Length: 336
Image (cartoon, rainbow, N blue to C red; front, side):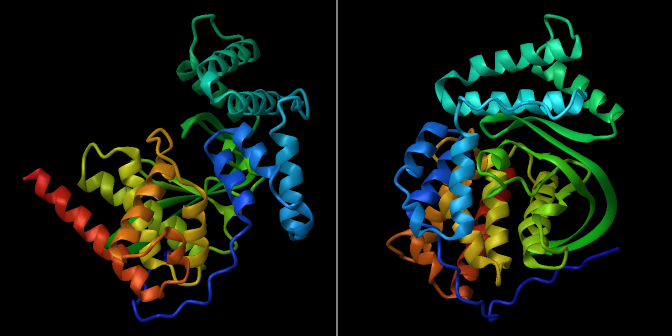
């Protein structure tokens, strides 16, 4: 199956942007994505729960429960898969409750994994995670381990389907191999911390794109064709054209492509960027969001990033394209 994405015409119109969630709730989700549960719980205390929609009320209840350090995730069974997931969930909660003690929590995670796997006492996380992946494979699961932003991650799924897709980006066309992932048992720490409100939609390697299929309502709508396929294909193209880009630089360029191509989902895309901002390059998505919003605000002479929500769609797209082009020209010039 091949999907050809055409670049979104600047003259297309977009529906009105959806109403953003209450500021305190947005702050709570943003703090959770910064792996800071104390700040997230403090923001939740400022939320008028009675005034929320039933969906947002459920989010508040779930986040308060999951981010409480007193909550001890228990394994669903004695299988390695369930025991490992409980270990990671305990680590996520503890590390988010003590941001300054993340290194110590990683040591505790490593010790728990050594006990689970019967690994040597000197095995560190970089050695333990491949061992864990092999054990999960024996139980019929695929997995993704490693550092994602501030924390060590664990994603687990059971189904994987390979397809070839063609993508038209603002600066060229690319054919990419896409692995469609489904049957998830764990979407990773960002999903756990925000009760599914925010989560990884996919990632890129040197050989392929990996799509978390349940995060998209359809493989034909903009959530997939723009926010995943366009975004991740930009990573793929940039890794081929530019060497040594930092993670936040890759994200900055991919997010500009996403914003340039989004029509129906522009409001959702901007809300996602505005909710998750930070000044730490250790969280590439958050840092790139802030840089992008600052650059877009300056380009369009706006007072704040919030004004992007009501700016004309073609104006936003044109500004994003210009910033991407300027960034490309600057990097091309550095290679000479």
